[in-house]
Image (cartoon, rainbow, N blue to C red; front, side, top):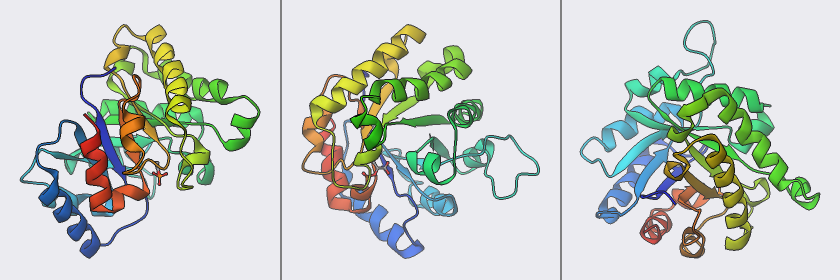
Length: 249
Ligand code: PEP
């Protein structure tokens, strides 16, 4: 188990200048001194706004939802890790299932993005997770190990610097959550895989994501290998997100 938990909000493609300001102000007003690390992963265009809103605090850090697999050059529409660092970004989600599904991102691309993030001084939050069909076919362990293995293979000893997020695809945005036992079982598999790759596996935070909310967070976060949460829908409501942060001791 890693020392300090991480609660990261994934806003996905939501927000506006006005709504972001209201949300961040409400979070800052209620957050106090959390015992966990907290991050907000916002759409690229709002990162400068969030950087300004969070300028007076170190309590909440900034994250992006993706980054380019390239350093610079003729990649229209891409945003590099170095560009994100220019705006004070600390984390970058890579391999979210929505990008794997809608943008066709492969395990290898995800591994390259994790490498680019590390090279730019960002911490990649590497998402892995099985679809409902894969779970029903008994493939969960095989799928998450295959996805993580690509990242381990390309990143070698730097693997201890990443964050992993186990996000069962069937639980994302559906209101269906893995039970604490189901989640812990997969987290233990991922921890064992990390242990085989690095002596610092206990340093790697393995987050759970998939309909985590104010009501179920405490029980999930109490599991020995669940080191935090990647929160979608509930991160858009300040009271709910604050309750999840409070549950992460
Ligand atoms: C996510 O998008 O990473 C996520 C976990 O979403 P939700 O919490 O809404 O299921």
